[in-house]
Length: 255
Ligand code: ADP
Ligand code: MG
Image 1 (cartoon, helix red, strand yellow):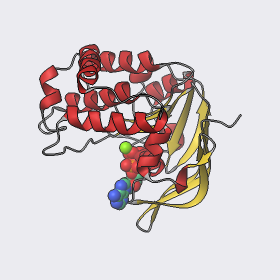
Image 2 (image 1 turned 45 degrees about the horizontal axis):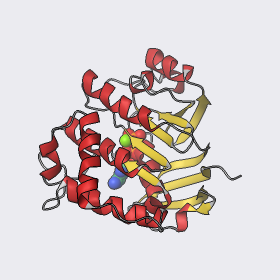
Image 3 (image 1 turned 135 degrees about the horizontal axis):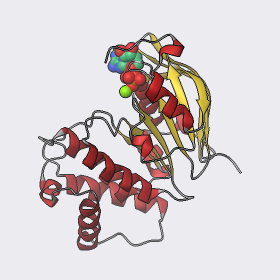
Image 4 (image 1 turned 30 degrees about the vertical axis):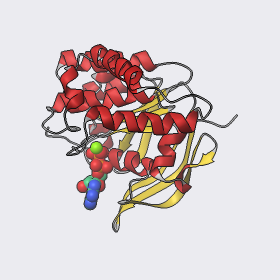
């Protein structure tokens, strides 16, 4: 059996700048991994490159997802295969409501994953959407607003988690989904992610702080510093980083 995600010796550059260097990471089905690291260490670069963002160039290494060459796939093929990215900075889209955006994404992905299954009717989709929005304590009116336009920081993050709950990917890359959330919203988001946990769902949680990891307990924690994974361990590593920061890696942080 192949791992769900297998990254070998990956280098990623932005323009001429090599940001990610020699990252290797294996994620099996059902596992929750966390990548922690100081700002600017290349966490988002890694996530965006895995999703196929055109601004990021893979200069070395391999990445396989579900046994297929991830790097040869278009971003939409990566999504259809079951990879999902919750953005650190979600973009707003004028003229497309959150509901219609999700309805299209949902149908496009389900048609690919279960070709024999009939498309969900708009009414049944709407019921499911309302149910998931209730779970995330989101105002149902948000579904009719242009995607992320004028959403508060917390509403944007919840909208990313709503996508996760609706699309049910095999592997979710969650890029700082906890940042900017107050403690109540953080718990709601954590409950949402925990509700997804099953042998059919894996996650890579990218975060600066250990506080989300107190609610969504990772199986493995990796520390990324200056573009490389410098240490890996269990969840106790997150607790140590929360106490000590990154100073043992030669990083002093002011914020
Ligand atoms: P993290 O998510 O760990 O905070 P990033 O992956 O966002 O780190 O950034 C890693 C490094 O790459 C930083 O030095 C950042 O300034 C640089 N970088 C990120 N995006 C760009 C970009 N679009 N153009 C140039 N440099 C970038
Ligand atoms: Mg980042």
